[in-house]
Length: 408
Image 1 (cartoon, rainbow, N blue to C red):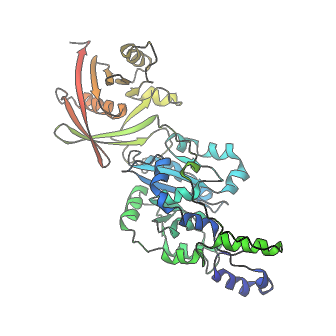
Image 2: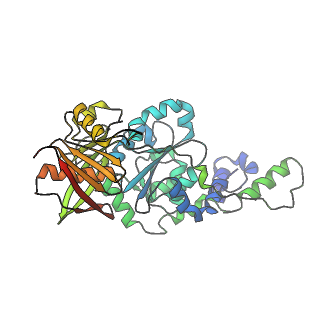
Image 3: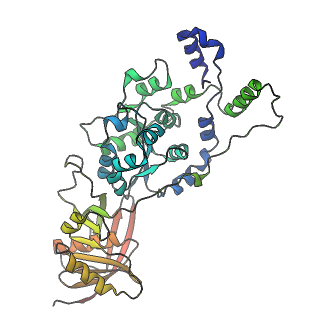
């Protein structure tokens, strides 16, 4: 069964004896994507992609010439170089990898990237919905990357073994049209450039080669099966079901450690970028390391991060716990910590090692404590009652109130 008339022509040319049994039946997977496009925003919501975020989907086929086989550190490099408030990263790993190596091994390979925010989709269902939700595909010569290109998404090739793709195939066309990643340039720069410069219709030739009978695969396959069973085809029309958003079963990790940059960009205003910490990266991948500071949640599994973090976030208060006692205990247990913070009924309470207690109204404890730490380090006078925080394309105003100081 083939998806396109051109494939039947190649079959006849390469294997004349098989020409009589080749059937163009279309592509049922692609047809489901065609009828599900209107659910793009629902898929993004299911993947916890915020309206202002870009969704980067990393696709790898199997074999040692695949993305995972040739560049296994790419997943962690992406999580390290992309600010997590601006990007979400989802991985699609070929079923052969999951079944050949086992779920435990795949999860072990990608464990650090997962802790840093990578979402992995299982090997059976949901991959089409992820492609429909994407803003950019990073892939290889596998079919999933081709499906992404057929949706006219920007595509970057992390690897592409030209010798592995058939002449005249969709794969060969992908290798011709898609941009290949330059390992000597920063990933973020190449991703942003690919998204900004993508021209609609660039991958139209790939879309045209995916199937020569779009929307007809279910009908053709049903007719073929009934013909082989020597039965009459039912009079009722076959159905191509949409892909329900709930099919995307995700285990979204909670990022518990960040490298944070906090840059003054105006009077009482800071721009903040958060990059997941706890993954092995070099300074070339993470050029922000010289100016960033660590913000780590006390529940993080890597104790080494807590031993060096100047900012520690506390677990939400349990019944009967007092914020002061929790924060004081954190500063006692982690000598490197200069600031500790916890969410409370009024927003967030922050305690500094100098004895300052500051109440902050805002949406994110991590952002609030980052600003207070920056103020503490720079020593630029009294902390104002309001601070503007810019994160990505969003802006938030924090309301701060100095409660009392233990030290005069």
